[in-house]
Image (cartoon, rainbow, N blue to C red; front, side, top):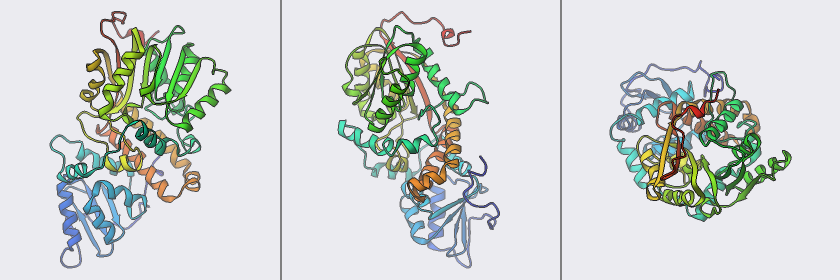
Length: 419
């Protein structure tokens, strides 16, 4: 893991940290960079400007060393740090020495601290162009991320092809064991049995739907607007002889019809868009029978805030991680009762570490499939996501709910942990 997380060789010559070191007076770029550091909370990072021989750092001891290749990259960073840092890193115009995850953790620790967000962050958010999550917009957003190729995702997601938070019941659990445990955890919360009919909104590559059929004998209808994922899921169902019990439907969650005893959505809400949460509630209310159960599993936040601008633009177009308060716009308008909430945030940090390790082992193949810019872009995304969950910038919520007045619910949580 240590080798895969290093951007540059540790033997690279480094100068001692300082506020600004140069031959003579500090340059305009160094002065502006120092002001930027102050504006974002003085993260413990040192910047090297090789064309002027300067190093710029905040007053705190540096735990990360960043080399900016040229003046144009520097002024792009000063103009819009949220977007241009990630782009410059992807293009090799910014190099990060030492541990990439530790570097990103230092940044996220500043941004996740209590208090008002830095002025540069608020300005960048105000200027952002939001992607629409209409029927056509959602399909385009999903296509840009999930349809870049099943071969790519199969390199690092593991056998289950589950692209959501795993559940590590023991520290020694492998990624595949933890993904299977997550599916089992969800099924137990829903008290699934062979008598159940399930509607899944946003099914990925079909791993949960197939687990529900294979392990519990339930009948499942699973919806997804990613063509690549649906084709993969259908093929896997046929290969396992389960296609008579599971139907994978290429359609939007808003077009779900029919009824079910269990409604489940794992990792889809992030792509719905805040303004569409009442639609999710209407779909669940319409689909669930009187004693139906529902579960929504989603990345979230402690407080409302948009997704990182660079990740939303380059990786997850149209995505938004909600707070618990925002998620209630699913349930409150439809009088749906929330009966259990669990936050498994540490499990997602571990999941992402496993993904990153697998990604780095396959990096030569990724480079041959795409290019070096793509390799660096996804490395930054995965490492930054580890840091976001480790620092609590992002959360992972599982919310269990039912219809109002349904008394056929367990008295305790013991049913989740059968002997």
